[in-house]
Structure formats: structure tokens, C-alpha cells
Amino acid sequence: MHPLFPVLALLAALLPAAGPALAQAKVKRCLSQAEVLTEQLVRHGIFLREAGTRCDEYKAGTAKLWKEFDGKFGQRFAQQTAKRKKLFDREFKTKATEVMTYFDGRLVTYYRHYPLSIAYCENVDKLLKDAGKKGWGGFTAQAQTIQNEVMLDYKVCN
Image 1 (cartoon, helix red, strand yellow):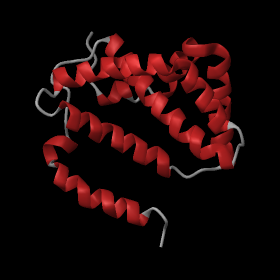
Image 2 (spheres, one colour):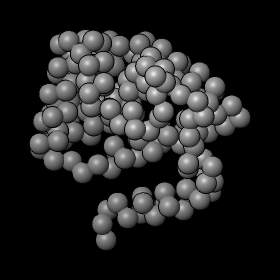
Image 3 (cartoon, one colour):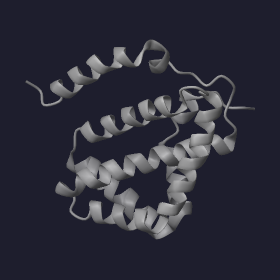
């Protein structure tokens, strides 16, 4: 049996309980460019946290690089998360926390079970080192490039 089977079975069992409205939540209006960037930053932070932590067994030091970056920019991550919460409050008035938790849980589950490889972890190491050298601006540039599926997930204001 594949090691992900129990996790996928659990997710399949839980998803219907969340309800079809939650699984298909759509932004009613549109996101500004600043809101798109906020979502990109939050998603990229989740990615680097999960990948950096997990990749340490393939590429020693990635967990340490993530912890250093998070230690240095944790306040900015908190600011982006607060901005994102306002966006979810606006778009999903009565279920904002539930929808945001669903979205985040989906991302975390994906990154925690993404198959690790030397090439993947070397790329994560490179991203973490680059962000560490270039700071928040380098991290932001990565988020805009790497997490561009945000543009597909949300309607963007013109």
C-alpha cells in the first residue's frame, strides 16, 4: 500500500463533511494587486516552511535556513497573515475562518506529503539561501514568480 493512501482516504472522508460550498468557495468580487501579493507571500511562506523542514534529511541545513529566515521576518509574516484574514473576512463573511483554515490545510497537506527528492530539496535549499541573502525583497520576488497560481485561483481586479 502506498504510504499516502491513509492520508488521502482521510481527506476524502473529511471533504464531504466540509460541504460542497466550502470546497468550491469562490471570491465574489476581485482581489487587488496588493491582496494577490499578500496571498502569494502567505502561500510561499507555507511552502518554504514545510519544504525547508522536511528537506533537512536530503539537504542538511534547510530546516535551519527556514528557522533563521522566519526568525528574522516572522513579524512580516504575521502582518501578511493579518491582511489576508481581512480579505477572507470580506469575501467569506460568515465562514471566513473556516474557509481560510480549509485553504491553508489543503496547502499544508500537499506540501507535507509532496514526494521528496534530492533535486527538489536542493531547489528548496537554493530558494532559502537566496531569500536569506536578499531578505524580504528576495522572498517577495520568489513568491510572485513561484506562487503565480494565485492568479488562477482568484479573480484579479483590473
